[in-house]
Image 1 (cartoon, helix red, strand yellow):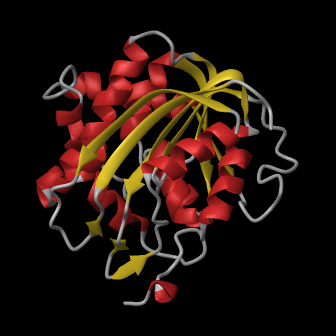
Image 2 (image 1 turned 135 degrees about the horizontal axis):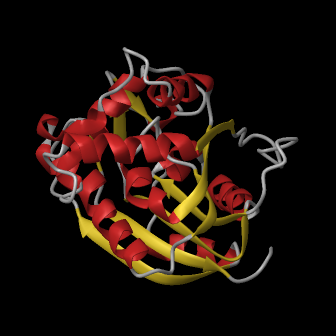
Amino acid sequence: MDSCSFKYYHEHEYDPNDVQNIFAVPDADKILHEEIVKFPLKILQSLVSSGKIAGKTLIDFSTGPIIPHLLAICDYFSDIIVLEPNDFCMREMEKWQNGEEESWDWSNISDCFPELEGDRDKWIKKEETLKSKIKNVIFDLSKDDPSESLALSKADSLTSFYLLGQTSKDKEAYRKNLRKLSSRLRLGGHLILTGTFNVKHFSIGEEKYHSLNIDKDFLRKSLEDAGFNIEMFETLDSKVTSHLAKYDQIFVACAQKVKEV
């Protein structure tokens, strides 16, 4: 399939359950689950346990109505603002927050949280803590100020799992979108960015979706140009053979904002 025929995550509607199936059903593809979920969560848990990732406000800009990374970090922030680029993902998150009958059951990922695995009461308490802290906001990347008129305060930390590469049509758009995210982060705050290197494709349901093909040098330069100092950078070589995604590496970067640009 020619890359120009790929769909775009933030422009074309899809069933959010297809995204959640990837992130919340470990047995669906164990290697894919190990790489795209457990690997970044392990690093994230290590970062927050170090004490440097904490504060009042966390902003999240990540693929789909997913919560595993937010469960890992929610105890370290008072307020969590989840930026969604479309209405249907926001609706799925709200269904989970409101405990609606058809909302997604995330307890399948308890293997990512050893202290919660097999303890239903602790799991419920953790989810309720996260639910109480989340506010959902539409984030329109086509605007110079995507959170225009929303009066969002600048965050102490910002997480972005996979979505930046999926919503950026080319490298210049990636750099611009990174700067837009940076504008929502205070000086001294931290960005935790997860994505893929040399991605060929990723699928939602039966459709292939765009994901920008970048490498380590481009990412490092883009972060530096957006005002960040990279403090941690980890990669994992891919062993995935799934039809759902094809990429060379998963990366997780932690960078501190050191200047406004």
